[in-house]
Length: 331
Ligand code: NAD
Ligand code: MG
Image (cartoon, rainbow, N blue to C red; front, side, top):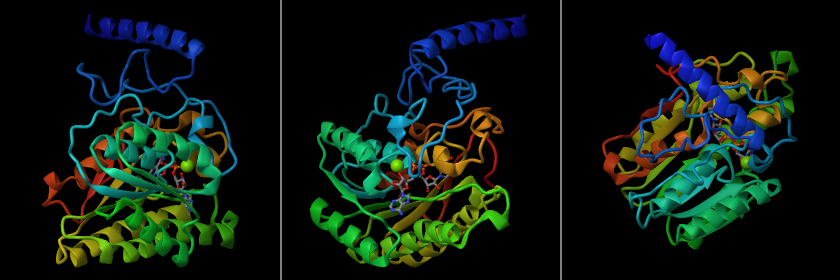
């Protein structure tokens, strides 16, 4: 009987999904299902879309606004409760994906927010700036390429002076291109991946630390690849392994200054990076299916981890990693 009930619900859920999909593409499993903060319990297996994503490809760096379906960054669901009141945050890759979800959550928790992104991503960045302003917070947009030390230190200086301080740094930007074999990874790709993902983290952190007071935090975006590299992500996974150790080592150093350093390690999340070469061609349909929860995550599901790590409430948490990977991959 229990099984019968379960399969009946699945069929009904599927019918609702069919109607919703016909009306508008959605990341939600059923029309009416909400993101974080809803009063009703939601099954994590079916909270978001479980059917395959349509195959699609955008030129790098890709826009969230052109994805089908659009990711859920918590635009309509994230509710703050003053957990970051008066804080000053800089996020790289804050225009889209996980960085956007964290930026929205930070603003709704009461922080002023500066975002960095590439000039080609201005349209996505404008949406984030509008949401931060709607939350009644200061929004600072600082476009530019983080692959040079000179720009990274300029970025930090501008964020610090325009926000009037800096006490949350989120190193989140990354470059990811899947290649089946090491022979297909060009020197240019290898260089771009390392410069974006790990050199910039070093340069930006180095510039920010002297400006940060005790109680400040650095949060780095690691990955499930920090622990178990996807074989098609040799260069990217190498940077994510480095980010894990960079985080733990820097946490030891900065404990003396009262600055906490942690990381978030996501599993498969529906973001622009994935539709601009992040997956091998033909793989998007299966994206996220291998997780025990059986689906990809949405950026909105990561935002609470960044908020918690940034908040003074987690003052004994440093040198560690919060995972969000649908059930496997982290130690
Ligand atoms: P995303 O495409 O939304 O964000 C990546 C951002 O990196 C871009 O928006 C862009 O602004 C920025 N960026 C790339 N190159 C840059 C450069 N040279 N200069 C300045 N900015 C640059 O994708 P996302 O998935 O939200 O990625 C955010 C973080 O999450 C990354 O660190 C990524 O490695 C990590 N991550 C993502 C997944 C996933 O499945 N999506 C899984 C694990 C980890
Ligand atoms: Mg982007």
